[in-house]
Length: 523
Image (cartoon, rainbow, N blue to C red; front, top):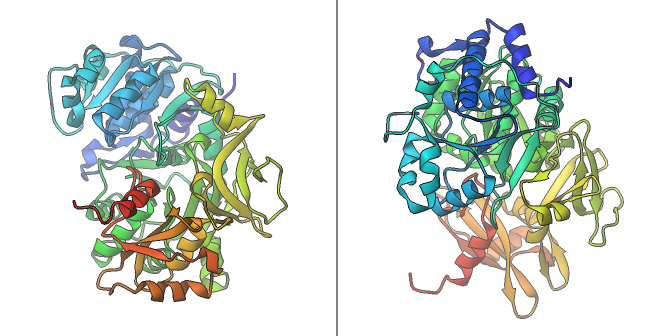
C-alpha cells in the first residue's frame, strides 16, 4: 500500500514524535497545549465524527472557517478518514460563497460561528440541515456543534487511502473570473513537502504560525513541519502585535507572510519590545515584494533567513524557492537576485514556450510550463479549463518568465497582463521593479490602459512612502530612463492610498485600470 498519504504521515509523526509539542495555544494557555500523541487521538476522534455524520471515503465536506486549532484538526481528521475537505474563502461575498458551495457538491458544511448568519439567506437554504457549527470564539444559533459531536464519537482506524486519491480541494483565488476547485492528491501535497524539506531544513523543534488564511494553498507549507515533528500555532486573523507576541511566547520559528503583512510589520511593529530569538525563517510569496521593502525586512531581522516562494494552488503550492543563501548573496554582490523567484524545486521539470507553443532557448522569455509530482490532476468539474491548462502531462501556468544562466527563475508577468504598446511586449513586473527603487515609492503596480496612438499605454499606480512628497511625472520618467528602454517607461501615473487587492493580497490590475478610466467622473 502506498505510504505517500497525509494520514500515513500523521500516524508516523504521532509514533516518532509522540511527546513533542504538536499544538500550542495562541493565547498562551499551557493547559491547552497538545503533544503529538494527544493530538493524534483528537484526530482519530474527529475522523470518527465524520464517519458518524455519514461521510464516506472520497466524499467531500466544506469548511467555512477562520484559522483555528479546531479547523486544522478537522482537516487532519478528514485526511485520516479518507474524506476530502473543501476549504472555502470566507472573505468572498455571500453570493460567491453560495456559488462555490453549489459547485463543490459537498455532503456537509462546517461553519464558523462568525459566519453562521449566512445560513439565514435564501442562497444557503439547502445547507441548513447539513451545517455543523465550529464554535471558534463563541456560540451562534442552534446548529449541532462539532466539539460535542467529536466528544461523542469513537476513534476511527486509519483509512488506507491511495496516494493518488484526492486529499483536499482548494479554490483558486485569481484576480479575475470565478474560482476553480483545484484537486490536490495525497501524493501532490506530500511530495511538495518533501521537496520543501531540502531547503527549509525542518526539525522537531520548529513551531509554525498559521497566520495566512487556511483557505489559501500557502497553508499547505505547514505539512513539512508536521512531517518532521514540529508544532503549530493558529491565529484567527493577522495583527502585527499578535504575530510578534506569538514568536516571543510560543517560540515560533517559522513565519509565512504575504508582502502586505511584511510591510505592516515594518511600519507598525515595535520589534525591540519582543524576544524574537526563536525566529529562524520568514517565508513570503503570493505577490511580488518591493526590493526596498525586502531589504528593510532583512535589516530588521538580521539573524533570520528569508525564503521567497513561487507557486500556484495547482502545484500544492510551490514550484521554485529563493533560499536564504541567495538572499544573502543578493545583498553582497548580486542585487538582481532579489527580483528572482528562486531555483525550481527538486523534481520540477520546467519549460518556456513561445506563442506558437515552441520551446525557447535558455534565457529567453516564454510561458512557464511545468510538470512534477506536486502538480494537480486538474480542476473539479471543469473539463474545458482542464483541457486548456493541463496538456500532455504539462501544466500551463499562465505566467511568463525566463531562466538565467545560473538556473534562477524570473517571473515577469501573468501572460494575460502583459502590455503590448506600439507593437512591443512589456512585462509589467520589470517596470515595477525599477519604480520600487525610487525613494518615494512604497508600492507600485503597472497596467495597460487604452491609447489611440499605441493601442495600449503604461500606467503606474503608486502608493507613496509615509511623509514623502508626490514626485512629478517627469521625475519618475527620468528615474526610469537609466534602467528601461523608452517604450517600457510609464508616461501616466496615479497616486493612491492603497492598491486594490484580492483577499490574499494579489493586486487587482483590472481595478486599477477601471480606477484610471473613471478618475474624472464624480464620486
